[in-house]
Length: 324
Length: 244
Image 1: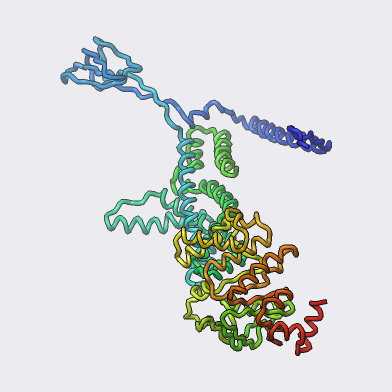
Image 2 (image 1 turned 30 degrees about the vertical axis):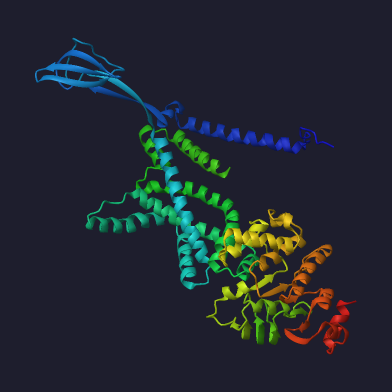
């Protein structure tokens, strides 16, 4: 018998619909309560001011620097070459054709606008978002590499490897990320940069200390995920590989790790999501990622309510797209 | 071929078990030895001590004159010469049947891909599942998996084959096909040590039957002697229970 092309209509109990209705009532009730509360403090919602922090049109005005007369206008592509005769002699000015405000024979005075150019520019919010994505990707890649080695070291029989990995994992997992960022930037960063300065090399920008802090932080958690993945593979797999004469590294590479990695992937995705959210702490060492960018916008626009909701929403979009 | 002298092994966790107590055994090349005994009698431990999957506390194991328990011995070299078949097959689930059989040939024996494939196909034909070459372990029945596992071990051209209850995890109708492969091997003169509960197999194929209880070898003898005229009371009791 063929199954019908559409699934049968599911009969749900009344409590399901009551629950669903209650959910939406609660959700919109909360939003309404928030709105009413902001009315009480005379907060003016200005959502229309928000888009400019994503993208905006930048106006560039070309001004003349001396008094004189435009004696010629010659086209060159989408630009115009103006000849300006002034007391200092003749001068060629290269201005965009679009938005040209002067013509041949015009008298101009210092400070006059010759042409106005408009460009689309990426706003602070998108710049911050992009930096957050970049930092997260780099820290993730480094974190996985560190975590893979630390995880393998964690199950090694050699105390050098096992204790090293254990110390690393316990230190990182046992202290706050914020403190680790401070240590990377203010302690290690100061040391590195001072030594580099003494040797006459360029300074490493704060971004890289931030990335290093995130990568070592993620690495410790990835190490535990890797360890759990390796230990979840049945002992018989290792015994079978070893009984065939494979060495420990060979058994690891050809038999254990390929199987472990399949089990590691789902928790690893969860770890990256945490990493994206944790990167919001990097603003503290002057890395202008999404949270820091939002804070700067709030400072100038005073639209704190809108901005922080937008900020949270952008993080949600990032993490949600990863959890799919 | 295999010389075991005064082997002792005690497990301390979760509680003290004397798995092997002063076990000595000598196995000649081409001999088929079947080890039987009640569960917990140490027969699997004995087998696993032969290729050092388990490390004995004291005593010696010599395989082809090589001291297996000596830390200076390259155990991987020894294991390459000693095939092992497990109760739970332990095929590599992420690799196809063919890759299961070629992996160690390529990695350990450093054979070329073509050579390893040729060997694998010949062995699959031998164990009677040539048509499953491209399948993955979870697509095979238990009996087929165990035959692949035997082929995988044979691909290394071992001098000895160890079987650790190879049919205990199988549905009854699949036991025959695995035993058939083992009988073929025995007829071809392979040195074999089999831990099994298959008394029919022991009677038909074994050159010698070893009966273990409480970590010690109680009695050894030819199948005729062993099944017809066991000397020890413990052996008689075991046989009466198992042959009931």
